[in-house]
Amino acid sequence: MNVADRSACWLVVNADDFGLTEGTNQAILEAHQRGIVTSTSLLANGQAFDHAVQLALATPTLGVGVHLTLTEGVPLSAELRSILPTLPLNNQPYAWMLLRGRLPRDQIRAEFVAQVQRIIAAGITPTHLDGHKYIQLLPGISQLAAQVARQFNIPVMRAPRCLADYWLQRPSRIAGLMIVQAMSVLARRQAQRQHLRTVDRLIGFADTGHLTAAAIRHLLAAKRSGITELLCHPAHRSEHLDRLYGEGYRWIAGYDFDAETAAVSDPALRSEVIAAGWQLTHFGALS
Image (cartoon, rainbow, N blue to C red; front, side):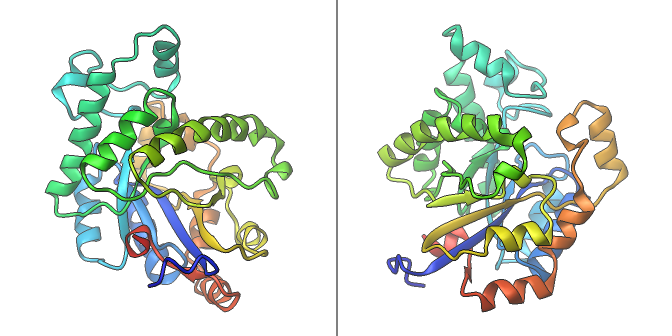
């Protein structure tokens, strides 16, 4: 694969939250085998981590990266567990710590190292690094994420340039997009300092949880050279997923997992994407 050919239209379709539940894992695997998903990001502290690893090791064509997290579940490292026995349900506490100059950088770095080490110890060579709820973009944390990626020779870090040609149809996401865009500028600088690759653009942010086949066709209607990442969240509804919602994982409440899973698992859509000139790949192949 000649990644030096910047005129090629590379497309990485990455499914987040691998390891969250077995239903999530199975949906991602099916979307890879039948549809357009080429890549996934693994939660090292996910309750279905072992199941995800089993599927990943049996599916070498699926690129697997690290989905760093400081929210939901229990820390893997003793350092972070000493101050946060249970992770918060959102990133807000870290933003407050940052503003007050009290961000526990050493403990966060130790946690990121522990998460990467667990994935590598399971037999997986990570193709990329990103973050649950975009935690890898938060100022002060983006530097740590980039350093850890470099330490473990992970070649790609998500620091997205988000396209604005579709999100205007979802005005409720505009504020979030602007925040992500602003943080990404700083995160890209950190990635560059560590000689990490970042993609040319990220699409699907505004459609998270509502990514239909029609939305995908719209997003991919105009071919763009370079590397494009399409973000998605396939999952099969299950008692496990409902239990997580009951435990406070409120971000899944409005997600239409059935529609999104059906869209990214559609063999006909995969054929359309390839026929349109997009070259499906994963980050490991591009590196």
